[in-house]
Length: 432
Image 1 (cartoon, rainbow, N blue to C red):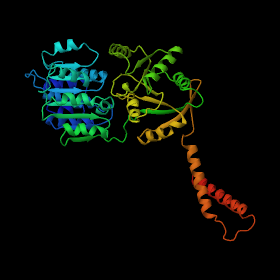
Image 2 (image 1 turned 90 degrees about the vertical axis):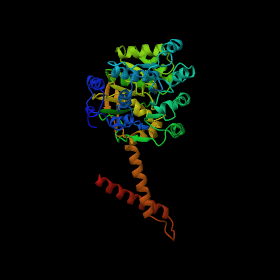
Image 3 (image 1 turned 135 degrees about the vertical axis):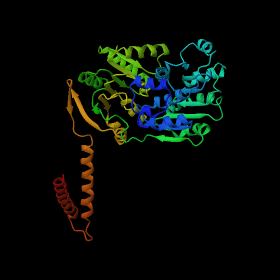
Image 4 (image 1 turned 60 degrees about the vertical axis):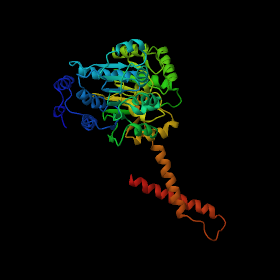
């Protein structure tokens, strides 16, 4: 299908799609929509920002029977923010219908939620732990739902939520249709998938360029300064519409935010230790553009859709390099240009090489007095050392120890080797 109008969607869905301004399905949507419409379990493996949310919402809404007041689809996401985003996108699709959907996430009054479930919704969106609790309480009846979507499955696994999903999936129909979406499929996730999915179709969007082409990737050496001072140098050189500064831990994020506050820079914070109320308040403040800078952990890298991010700053490189892709994918969205700046130390070299193999084209720059300065290519010194080593090998191979040694033979061998090395260097310089 090359256009949304090629699908036989119900009129209200066509109207909703037109209202959203969608015209052509993304690659993951072209693959997944037909499978979900047919009820064929599948794994959709794609990077963030590929349109996967609508690849399952559109066909699920199409399949809902409005006359049946029972749960027909369960959609689970590992964080409250991601679940909220899915629910918001779903609400846009069903606002002109009688389809009922419920958002079930932690941090809300459980008893009030139970009271509201006296009428079962047709679509459930929520976090694994809250859904499992409500199923265990007998408040949410999932035995009628033939469809289960597990979004961000690798993150759910990392956060320890697979057991929760297993806890309520076991209450769902035997012929369960399961649709799993994930950037990566860890080996440890396989037993769970095999338990519920019989010969699923695996859609792997193997894009050679996992990130937007209109991102400038800049490396800034920390050198003798502290990371905080280097971060301040970078901030003085940019004037972002909105910048997200990524840290690896909550403790570091709080420390960086505190440092910026001392410099008179007010920054928002997003990390896992915020209370549900504080997180909701923070997301509203961010969307209301109360901050120019946000300090975040990788919780914000996975699918949280904050509009207008012009810059991403990696205060440190993530331990799991897949998160590097998720982080930089927060900028350059909806056709806009973006900049991803990464602070680094020499010990980060191995990680940077692996990131480059993922298709990231770095350019190295320094920043002084608020001005960017171009630096020599990062690998230049290593390449020089490598060439010198190669020349040494060639010289040693050509100059051998004589069978009959005479006084001063070692000195003569050294002279001969230096002559060969000099000749080899000239030859290589001519070839450049």
